[in-house]
Image 1 (cartoon, rainbow, N blue to C red):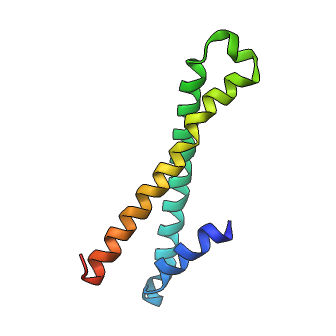
Image 2 (cartoon, rainbow, N blue to C red):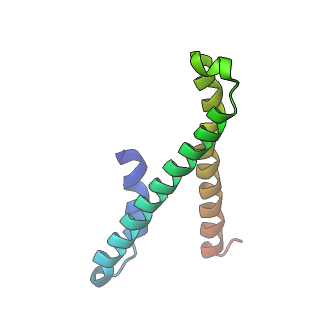
Length: 98
């Protein structure tokens, strides 16, 4: 978890005025928790939809769960790719190259 949470936190807090550090940290942690909750809810909803559409005979076998999970793994991958692209565009805009 330190590999995932520490670098963005360090980057986000690097240029914050020390007087506002507490508020900035609280805001960042709140948004992180909100993002984690929303991502979990979306993945759970997608999995439920996929499981509901698996034929009845496959629900009993383990292949029904495997079939349902196939698309579920792509949600975080797509979200991470979109966030990475958005951050790249933002950095280019701030640095004056875009």
